[in-house]
Image 1 (cartoon, one colour):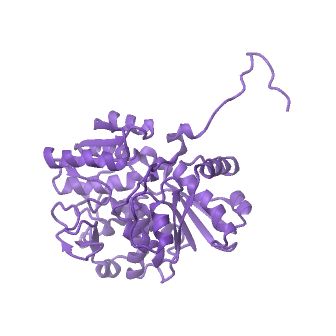
Image 2 (spheres, one colour):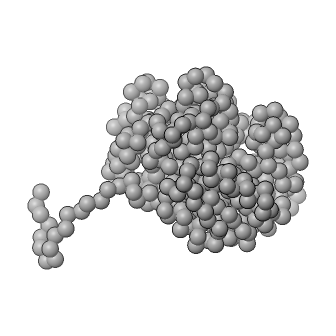
Image 3 (cartoon, rainbow, N blue to C red):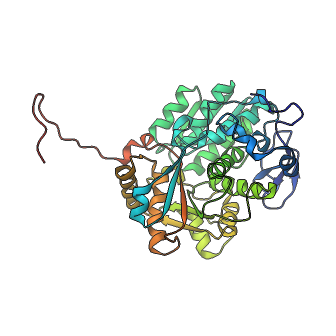
Length: 411
């Protein structure tokens, strides 16, 4: 991978900044969180990018997330670790739109990425930057899919990965970790319990902590979801973006892409309303939004079929809530029964088998329409964050067995 012009930098990264207290840090050495305990955000020379790069040029580049390399942290193209991640399709859903009473409904389907989820974006950029900074061993807790993605990309980079996940995480994600050569451990608990174990390995065995928002670069990979969407829409934004929210990195990343795009003049000042969707069995962001709080309280007894968003206390809670409020959006919780019904409805109407986290967004749209928080003429985009085939337990299959040589019963 090479830069398009020899006189242009591959990346315009300048420094890291705390998302809460705004203290700055050197971006060219490994960093974790701020001294105040909050996530660090990558900052770029956006003025230089706007002056030196015509956004129209991006359309002629290779269709992967690395087409936005000026706005990504990797400094040298030879450090890029890739499995062909991005661009994912933006699919119109006309039948479902008609049922919801919407003029325009589309789904950005992240299930077609390597490892079958949007986590490949964060892993690609996070592993690439870790490699560039000389990191050789990474450790992280996960609800499943992030661990699978980081294991695969670490293997691609020749790095060692240690993954700790709850025992109830989807079985396929364990397989992905193991086949990629990661050290995998299961814990009888939730992601916070997995995090405590991973932190011990970081403290005692020399692993770099790549937990959600405890390093700055996973977020930059997730940011490309927003950049891709805006490019696919002709460098404009929809009225509403609906996103499943656990740790919230995807939502924070889309908001970051929006703000950077506006600062560079690539987007006008319109704000799409960002909707954070959670499950009623684990909805700390929804409760904080409803209470007017700027951070979430830990959710007791967290449990939902949408396992990927089972995060009782997100580290970036204040960033999620800020993104929702600054865009005039909202946070909404749906029940597991609604999630499964929406998953089946989407597959039957549009042929798309999505993950339960993505299905939660479609359940939320139905509720938002009933509450008039989405109008009939709104252009709505839903992010499906993973392929449904990674969650076979969400569908009960009981086909009728007939004798060989017999005819199909007439119905």
